[in-house]
Image 1 (tube, protein in one colour):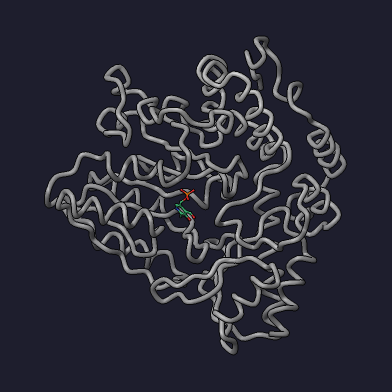
Image 2 (cartoon, rainbow, N blue to C red; image 1 turned 90 degrees about the horizontal axis):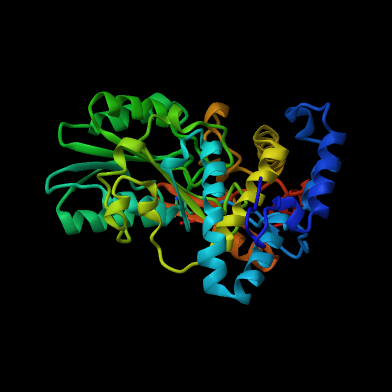
Length: 418
Ligand SMILES: Cc1ncc(COP(=O)(O)O)c(C=O)c1O
């Protein structure tokens, strides 16, 4: 991995940026090479060392990584260093030096998705990525789009705005979570598909309850009817192991600052090659980019250093391995549920079907005032998500790989005593 041209010469990222922590990560991984991801999931001494990579003060217990995750120090240092270098001679460093590095980031991200780099645009977040499709897909009055009130609210708003503007019809899938049988979900989407349907919007891992949705099955049915599919992968990218081809979608948008732990303010848009030409990007592009993925990147001046530092996050993830990350997050979720169950009665809004469960859980304590509990937890500097949507009225808990069992115990003890 090169940062060619960063200082006018070609140098590897690791050589350019302080890498003491990266070395310690390498050593840790070598030391634990013999363990399977499932064996490693419960090895606290290993995860304590991983936590060290984040340099956290420990003041807060952060159980809302589904919102935004902290980045490992190697990523933070890259951001800070590139910011400092940019500020020495901004217009030259941005537009002559960093601009040339973006394709390396694009390649690395495409590789993670198993997509072609000519299909991956670097964005600032999932909202931007998804709204490029919501507002850019040519649609006419009366065309139908399938969406759910359980999709992410700002994207639902985007679709509602599009409907008001262009008189398209939104067809709503009703989802009362938890739904343990994926066939029920598939049937709900299928039932709404009509000859007027142009696109199905679907959230890969649902933001309200962490459920993995049967995207591929729904997309295959849509495809057989000539309907396109847009996937919101904000909680699946960098979390669940998948290839974009396996989803059978045409478009996919995600942030990178959640599960990949890339710099805050980074995202990705995938557009199937054959579909690039017809989408109108949110920001105007020159005609020469009509059929090029770069058409989605004419955003004006921005912090390009963030885009380059994404590589530090992808390197971190590749070294650690998605399998270890997934196994640890499942372990933390199982631990939490098991311990909470010992003293509490709660309604679980997340699926109990392990095939469709991520590490994110949403629950409502039956014998407690959940709003007051949430407020008291915040005062105690234990941060999680408060969810009120549809039939869900509860607390969302989304630990990350730096979350320690001690932190979960602190949360559990507080809830038990409340
Ligand atoms: C499912 C889903 N989609 C999209 C978004 C928007 O992400 P961002 O704020 O990074 O644009 C979120 C944010 O939480 C989300 O949960």
